[in-house]
Amino acid sequence: MAPAFVFLDTSVSLIASTGEKASHGMNMLSYFKLFTPEEPSGGGSTRPFFDPSKWQLEDSDGESEEEGGVLVDWVREGTVRLVADGLVDPPEISTVSIQLPAEPREIFHLVEYVRVTTADRKVIVLSTGPKLHDYGSSGHYLVHDAAAGALFLSPHVDWDELSEHFGCGGPVVTRRGEASGDFVLAMVLRSWRTERLSLFLWSPSSTGPQQWARHDVRLPEGVPEFGFKTDVAFAFGGRWACWADLNLGIVACDVLSPDPELHMVPLPEGCARDPYVMYRGRVKDYGTMACVGGEIKLVHMDGFDDDECPRDEITISTWTLLRQEPSCPSRWRWRRDDGRVLRVGDLWVDESFLAVPGLPRRAPTCPVLSPDEPDVVYFFMSDLGYDVDGHIVTRGEYVLALNMQSKKIQTWTKCPTGRSFELTPSFIAIDRCAFL
Figure 1 (tube, rainbow, N blue to C red):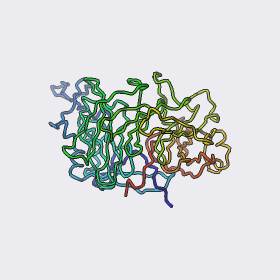
Figure 2 (cartoon, rainbow, N blue to C red):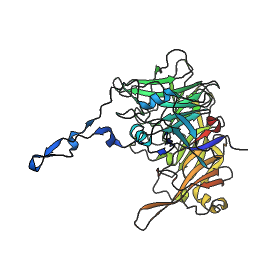
Figure 3 (cartoon, rainbow, N blue to C red):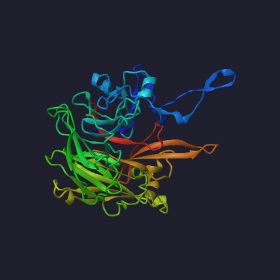
Figure 4 (tube, rainbow, N blue to C red):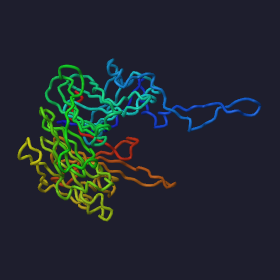
């Protein structure tokens, strides 16, 4: 029987009306318009010259903040579609595309990027980039609801006034029921002007105007004012939104409560780091967190970020969050899963590892938890080398399904050449029903 989930690359391809794959938007230089005033030259003629000091922001053609941009118009007109490029069973990587009613050149100029940020059952949230001059991405979130077979556009957010307090980890979507549009989108935002912290909630199934419900909240005890950054965001139990900092812990919120509050659940001892250390490290390279089979689980790789720790001494472990009082996160506690500890050196000499041709003796990275296999963790591994000119080249990229109970590679795949332009991959496990 096919797994109930797919292993999805979070980078979304942009498909033009011509059927061609379009490039993502330009870099920061594209936000400026270059003046070319004429400079006198010999013979009384003039010639244009390049002067970066005379750059100015391009006009927005009167576009209102509320309207957002051309991408917003396309969604409202129903001309934007999210399409699965071909769903494959894990550990093969599935990809999705978004079809846009424009030619490749227009897309390049108007849409900065589209990326999957989070999902819950039949709902997928897409980020379309920040609100910037001359871009059609607009800073809105798109929500694909398989139950409705449609894209929903989140209400406008005044990004000149507000910012995501926990970094750019994105919102959390919580599926409440099976009806069309029956989900809640949640974000924690801070006002630049008043420094007030607010929980923003929106559901398209709500009656009345389509706008965010704003609730004043306070940071829970143990959360530093600006040191908490979202590495993973996910929903739990049909009502909890969870923002996880893999150095510190979880900020959880019951989004269905009439008086929602933020709660802190620290990481287990030995997994947490000092919140006031400036350098966070590449925490998603050696840890993750997700809802698995109705429980919150954590993957931690002890020693990965320690340059003095030999690579074969890195230890992989999984943890489960025990909820003695389900409605009281302050009493939730972590427990390391019995027998689910593996030293990387022991993995290297296991027959299941040696059976994979070309697999290098490197520490696995970028773990992703399987949503319905409690003992399975997916890892990414690259075989990197150098060409004759000293440039880094990739000889092979692999996805491994590691069974933490048997300590063996359960299955594996070699990624196709040109998988992505990103050196560090970004994957998410999503229920297959999100595309049905």
